Image (cartoon, rainbow, N blue to C red; front, side, top):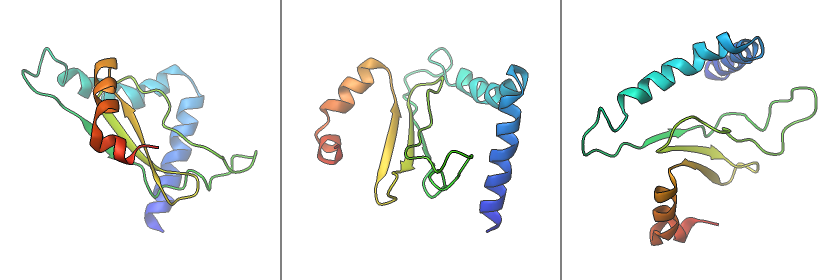
Length: 120
């Protein structure tokens, strides 16, 4: 319950910050963008870096903001590539993979036989 309360407080605080203007938004996103700058091709030689993050088991489909519970949730557009976010689906019995790649990477991913075996 402590984790759930902590996540709820964080969501509340971030929602408050994000609805108050661009300056508050930058407080959240700037450190993320700064870390990406250090991982840019200019700084990393002959290395492919992929970031994986699991958002599974968070209660995205249980939160009611006054219009009822959501029927679908997603991370939205993120200003980075080579990022995979895993999220529970609406029913909670499957996992969605939100994959942020460049066009070349997406084409390679779509042609991968191991990925095709699990893709819907």
